[in-house]
Length: 233
Image 1 (cartoon, rainbow, N blue to C red):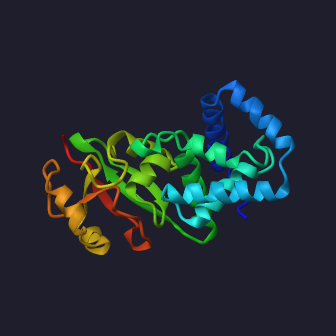
Image 2: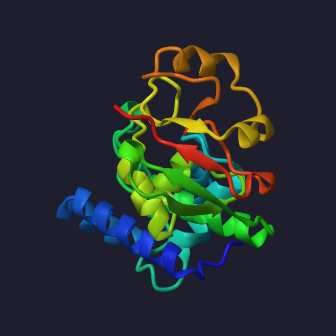
């Protein structure tokens, strides 16, 4: 079981729980409180299993899904057995139209914890903003996309990156708002975009031979020192 040790995960969990609490009306909370008292161990296990299955159905792998539920069950979360399916469903928000209400933030924190525990290393890279502004440094764990770094990275560079990279389609390659240029050497290492990505890049603003979508470009150890450039416009 994942132990929720990092300050970042605890912060994400508390934020997610606050979002969930605001989204559930007081009568629902009252009924949940009454039902908890009569909850059997078997029912609790069923609730956990259903919560894990729900998170998996939202596109996360089994380890991350179990980590999400373990984090919700961690001491200090204020949550009790029998509530987890209701909570993760509420945190998913209007997932059908891409409107998350806290689940993604918690899942990404869990995912980064798992990656760090698995020995994934930090990859540092440089970002050239549009308009000739000063280059800044950024970092993320191996396996993270530029989108992941912008949305869930912990460094000050990640926060600046989020100001320049937008991913309007939530990473399903239905837009090119996360379009970047990659330095030639790193582009060769990262590899050519697949057909679906290339089709979208052709619709991007001023595409170049080294263009990639930030939602598809994933960090790897041999991309240490990579430079990406944010296109003007």
